[in-house]
Length: 308
Image (cartoon, rainbow, N blue to C red; front, side):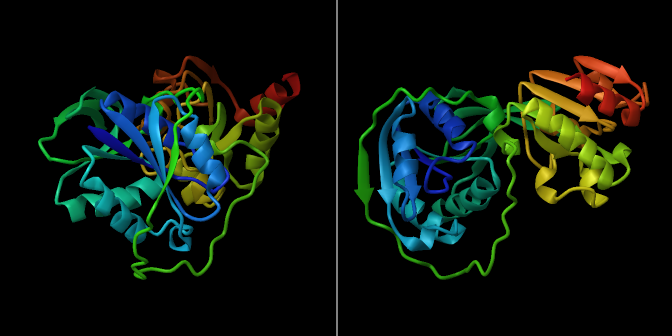
């Protein structure tokens, strides 16, 4: 058996979620191979080769993979999948775009966002916004699986797998990236941050989110937000934590002015320590919090920031 992990990378290194997908692939049995596609990806290939449990790194060098085109990736992976038992991708925007196309081309059922591997053909995945878990068994010859990063610890960088060049697939030419706007920040990337400070609609405005920035800088934390805060225009979409946003499980999650709707809890309730600050003592967020502070955030946050 061979599990092929589709790496998400920026050329110089692997993006968050790929290492966790490798950890899941190793548990599926057999060998774990990692696919790196694109140009100038030497750094990413070397990072993948160091992950414990990786047996081989496959590099397909071609410019038409640089923009993450799901059609081009799907064509390449489908040609490689004939010799694989599993195709694995992180449950990121990239993985969620590529994996369904691969499953369709292979005519198999995709298994989404697994959090545990029970056997090579049996997996556990959350349903009902994470309030229940389904154990799913697949009889398909190739299992196409996306992995929720919070369910698996990233493997140590103690490996030394060989790196092998393979032929690139065709450029399907079905889509083209015209422009891309990237958010630049000195803070950690939200999906992989060890600490996260999140704000909700209770902050009242984009201007008030600056209070969280000061606190996050003191803690070395990433900034997140509830969907209500994003929909209100306080912060960009890529700050959103929740069922329709990013799934995070940091060591410390501080929820400020967030009521705790079930969709938000689905994105952060696996955090190691949860701190909730809200003026409403009946807010649902307190039901999952390890520490709760009932108070006016406009008084609490500046004082907390000052004391830290």
